[in-house]
Every structure is written in C-alpha cells, then in structure tokens.
Length: 110
View 1 (cartoon, rainbow, N blue to C red):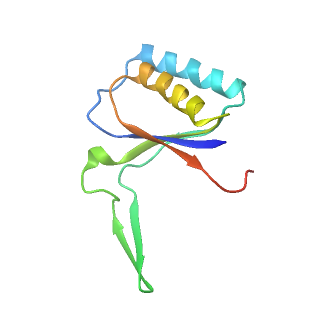
View 2 (view 1 turned 120 degrees about the vertical axis):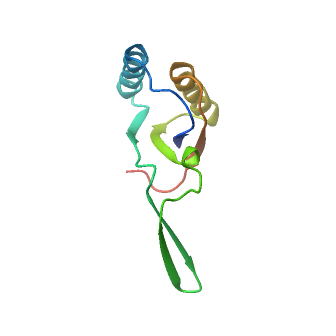
C-alpha cells in the first residue's frame, strides 16, 4: 500500500542542525528498509488550475492562506494505514509542531 504524507507550511520555526541530523537518519532508515519511495519540498506558491464546463482557469497560488500551503511530501510503501500513521508519528516527533495529511495512493505501481 502506498501513502502520500504531506506537511503544511504553518508557523513553525526553522529546524536546527540537530533536527536536520535526526531527520536525515530517519530518512536513511526508511530508504534502507525500502519504505521511502520519494520525498521532497514543494514551492508553496504553486499554480492552481480548475476546470468547469470546458473552461480551464489558471491562477497563481493554490491557497488563500500561505500557512495552508503544502510544502513537503513523502511517498511511502507501507503494509497498512496503521504503519503509515506510525511513520508519520515518528516524523512529527522529530520535526515538532505542525500539520499534515496522510492519503492512500491508488493506481498502478511503478
């Protein structure tokens, strides 16, 4: 089962070197275990697209409030939703305060 874990910008302070080191170790552990498929940061501005009645509208920025913008993601392979939640719980224990989501990814696997 694949899951997309995302984090929102929020008001969190910039992590210190100790947090970066702990996160790097966690990422390495997940990579070695074959759980982490992809990870990265996202431009919070982005571009929003909508379609209605055959008309496509493109606007700058997907959100009205910057703190609601999704700024990072991890695509993982887990045995269950509970395992995905536990991995996300470990992430938040390292990074501290914040907000994010876990969504199961459906469709063909690469």
